[in-house]
Amino acid sequence: MKKTKHRTKMKLGKSERGLKIVAVVVSLIFAAAMLYPMIFAVSSAMKDNKKIYEIPPKLLPDAANSLSVVLDYSEVKGDEKELKDKMLQDNIVTMFGVSQKMQEDSIMEIKVYGVKDGETVFYSRAHQMKLQMEKDYGIYKGTAIKTKVLLHGDRYIRACDSIGYEFDMNGVSEKAPEGLGTKFSEKVAKIMDEKYQTTGELVSVGDKVKNFLNLESFKYYLQMPAYIYPESEAVQNFGFMTFVFNSIIVIGFAMVSQVILCSVCAFVISRKLSKRAGQFVLLFFLGGMMVPFASIMLPQLIMYREMGAYNNYAALLLPFLYPYGFYVYLYKGFFDQIPGSYFEAAELDGAGSFYLYTRICMPLSKPIISLIALQTFIGNWNDFFWAWLVTEDQKLWTLNVALYNISNNVATKQNALMGLAVVTITPVILLSILFSKQLKQSIVASGVKG
Image 1 (cartoon, rainbow, N blue to C red):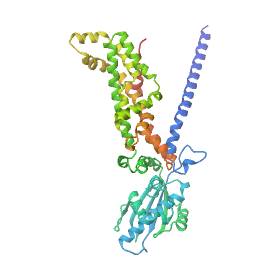
Image 2 (image 1 turned 45 degrees about the horizontal axis):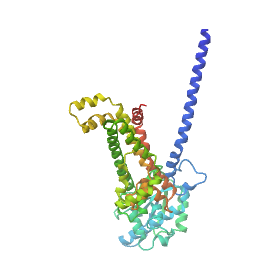
Image 3 (image 1 turned 90 degrees about the vertical axis):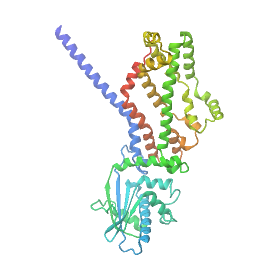
Image 4 (image 1 turned 60 degrees about the vertical axis):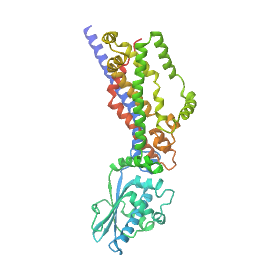
């Protein structure tokens, strides 16, 4: 009998271990399946404008190449002003020409050095995304990348000012590099000789792998709205952060208003009204949740316009002054569980309703407050339709409205959309990870009896 029991226990132990292993494997598979879209979005955002459209798509981006082009002006005659002008012309021709003709090679950075009598007197550096924005939305929008077009009028001067450069006849801080790879030397020399001739003599072309350049693309994604919407002063000054600020303002107001208004309503229902009257008022709030937004959307929009709450912050903030029924229900259930002796003792000491609310109910409601704050943040961070309906001015757009309008721009590339989407969803993911423990505790503590 003992041997049989021992064998049975061993079999049960093995089956339990096997079940745990299967559970872990299945969990990992589902976790990988859920994380894949996020990983693919991040990877796509780090690809260049050519690789993003590859079929079939690759999960990981190619290695990012940094290209250094050295031009010698020792034989070029003229004063300092003429030399600088020629270097500016060569800089734009080299950067845009190489970027245009070498899209297959993942050139994410181009550096141009101007050398005269052995001294580096000119330096300019541009990320591939910076050049792409100038071609799609900026100085060279809608133009062909040809030498005559690039140098027409003062375009090359404005482009160099936008990209940034150093010029000093006594020498600049960045010196022409040595010892770099020569993988692209022949290809660049051929492109420059056939398509984009320069005043300076091409003396060397070096390359180096710098994978962090893929991450630098996100910097230019945040600047992109300033190129797309140049008429908006706020977007010009702050770029994509304008939309982040708007979302923070709206969500911050929503969190504060819902936490306070829902708790006040629940306190009155729980402690100040009779049981029947409390149930009737609670039913009013819960019934409001059952009304489809589509059925009240147009009347609400007309009402807000008549009030002057359209295309301004009032239109975005006023809807949150209505307490959400489910949050009232959570508060009410929690307040019902607080022992009545607390309130009776306070009332015997002469405490009023405000004291009972602020000194008893709210301090004990921290789990509910954190739950409602997190749920309000996550829910309204993804909100789109109402904000899109009541705002026309770019400076009022929230993140999702901005992302939608940017995606409708024909010049916007898929890697830029992926990058902005990653920026948009990252705060929610980080918040969920950082406050996952508090969220679990809040849900447990918010349980309602009955």
